[in-house]
Image (cartoon, rainbow, N blue to C red; front, side, top):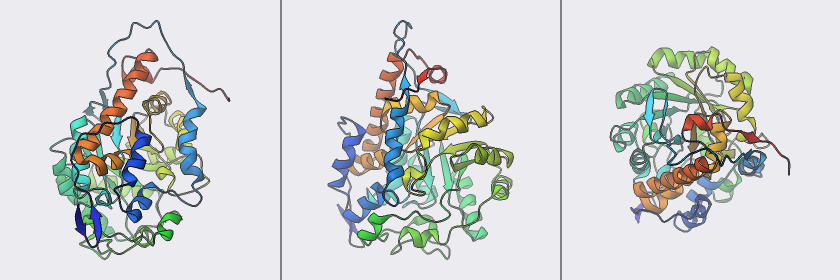
Length: 369
């Protein structure tokens, strides 16, 4: 352990023996300090939407296909022109230094080893450049929480381009922070600086709660902001936090190169639908115009399969990877991706699908039990 401003940071570096990803939460709770764990694990208000994110996967069933002459399923895929070994990606998640001393640098290493795509957050514990370096050339996206201060936005985008990121993810569902009671109960304030905030009026995040940090974020975001970022960066811009067909079409009309279906892991609007339950309506509206990313509640290979079958091109995980980070550093993150990918391969075999493209044509039932 190392101590930063009175906060214990784990330094574990080891491969994990994983039974399932749900098990990791209880294991991580034992080593992440209470305030940090509460920030990572919790949702907003009474966490109805957080819980619905898991339950929603029960609303669809995979049709087994036994006479398909399938063996050795392949999980490699190409999305946004990037060749990946897995359709599972690391969703942007803030302050991973709460889980491990090396934070996003180790996450990037683990994701790169798994052949996946890493998305780093504006509110990362490590800088854009250091996180990118951790991936050792593997593809990364940079997620922007747009600030009221355009100079601050421009500086982050400049650094992201310099670091070689392949796309910008613009998060649009966090103009204010969700009401997260765990942070209030724990009197949680970030004990570790957020490296990307240091240069501007936002300070560095240390000693602030998430609501105070969001107070510097833009409270008004519209299609013109999507266009502005595209024009400034000349990079693909993916709009994250989409849960309605209308918003998806607005984003595409503004030039978005991708749609990211997510409810922020149940951390923002409580009482909204599970992301999985709106995925199909969004992908039908998008109609293959641009790739679709999905996250929120993914814990099983069957979850990944179902999301792809409903039109997702990439499927993000957040909390499970952070728990893997806490327990084993870069190797722990790799272990999480490897386990989930192996579960996916089993499901692919039993569903008669050889490739990721085959999954997109797989049959799901909608039976109410």
